[in-house]
Length: 237
Image 1 (tube, rainbow, N blue to C red):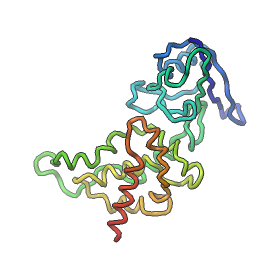
Image 2 (image 1 turned 120 degrees about the vertical axis):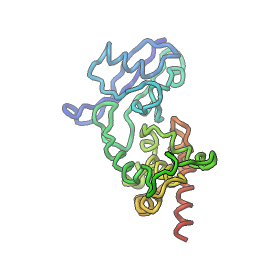
Image 3 (image 1 turned 135 degrees about the vertical axis):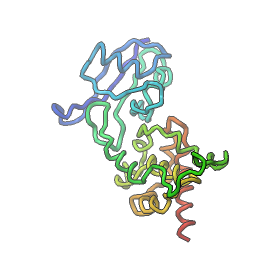
Image 4 (image 1 turned 30 degrees about the horizontal axis):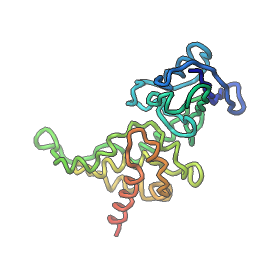
């Protein structure tokens, strides 16, 4: 079927502001949007800037705003966002981060916030039998955080960052802090507490659930953030 893909374009070397360019394409309902975008780049406009890697929903590289919602282009089928012949699909870069070019954004701030919470295992002891053992229940406590692919969708969708506090750490950073804080083998809670318990840390979150709605891995992000708030409050009481 014939569809129109409207792509937000911006080249910092030549453009003073973003603009929209339309591309007419033939696509099957079962085609992935990433395939369509790469076809546009390969046959119509080689200047189109787009980021992608594995194309299988694992790396998170091709997250973008599709018809107003953060999605992975590689997991989005045309039939998911275009209803029949002549449909229009609007594609924009992720929000809350500077645009590098077209659909690519500068993720430095996102990863700076991510590293700020010390998202790595901390232990003062070596394992006694080659590894630290856990029960299934102990492992389950931090299962949510292990699913994150750092696609930046939750950060882009966060209304707090956009409307209230642009310095908020963001959902992904808090989820990764929780992943290690809830790990029975880890001893880094006190260090991470310093990175979470301050005005721009965990507290700006208003539980609007936009991060949870757009997560391509189905992580209960808002729930994890609220559990972490409660854990900090209990620790301080």
